[in-house]
Length: 399
Length: 186
Image: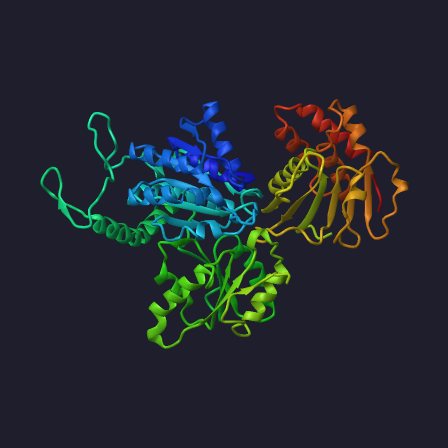
């Protein structure tokens, strides 16, 4: 059944369909309508879950950590400074291998204060051991929430489902609302390998020594380094689990695509625009316009950002003359994080071939600066004539 | 007007329900075969009474460009006083349509390059039994009279569904009366 709703409602409906047991959240624009909607579902009895209002995002994540440790399916959502305030707790969640799902409704971070969209918030949390998936429309938001719980619980790693604030969160568009029976068939109840139980008290994640040591049963237990190594290894194998999730999802819901990237008119393209989230859909309009001018260009959305699908990305960009990366965030002092990651993947997989495409990095839409489609087309057109600069080039800057 | 891709910009005041009105039209367009429907409010500074804008794009194909409307085919103005406060015709295509809620006579307006449609939705809505100032359903009737876009029946159905628990009959009546009484230029 198709409905017309905004992106926050798409996310809330996904969480309801997944029968999350515990929701803890603190309001922050533009995320607020998502968790408000969930609190309404819980209040009306439509959703059987514990909704725990908290006094901060730090506590929201602490509650999710506790709930998940006790075997509950836990969800939260935040944006911008709320996510940053969670920073200590979200690292705990991944280190403790808890399959929490969190929507990050992308918004600029202060200072200066700004409530509008860019992606500096989630990009700044790239290296903390969470899986990050970016969505480009409402169908992807609701479908990704559902897939996220399945993947997270399969690999015991938490997931951020990221989507652009306002541009997606507050915009209405049609999407197919999956049926409860289908979601139940896709996503079984959460059965953790280990859950806290008052009858068998235990300490979790206490001081873990630099070296391995014998545990209370006299068995050799991992040291801190082994535990962290396994997080990295299992994040890398999560790419395979994502492919499995996509296949299962397609079987049940009849919708499916490449789990890692979303290419559009890339096959015969000489130049490929790359980005995260809704910008890659806007770029499709630019690609269509430039194709009419005879410029062979395509666009590729990166859906899975962490773990980074480097092989799939490099394979898709093999033989291209140029890669043009559009980013709503950057690693201040260098360039866009995605541009750096792409260069790394290209070097790793294509350096041996002797042919590497140039990488042009555009920064745009920072703090919600309007991205005019004409300006975007012009930037893309210019970049297909050769790399504009070795430094990131800002679009729409009024200096 | 190219009916495969239509851009409608709504001007109202915070709290007036322009978003709900645009949502009703979006829903009716979708079930009429417009696969692409995108309704994007302007963001961040909404407060009661302040001028607000909403973009509604409807297309026979999926819409990938979510950026704000720059050259609308139609502008809908829920309060005639906004003509003085906001540049409501900004970017409007030559020959574009202005749908205006106003108590003033049609003849008192002179838009050179545009087609105007007017109705006193504020009075019509009170006549239909709605509280004073509730104009977001009546204006849909005027929009349909001015544009002949989707057919009044599907819009009436959309209004009654949206307001199923909040005076559906009175809301749809406002749209029906407005549809009858709207004065539209050729």
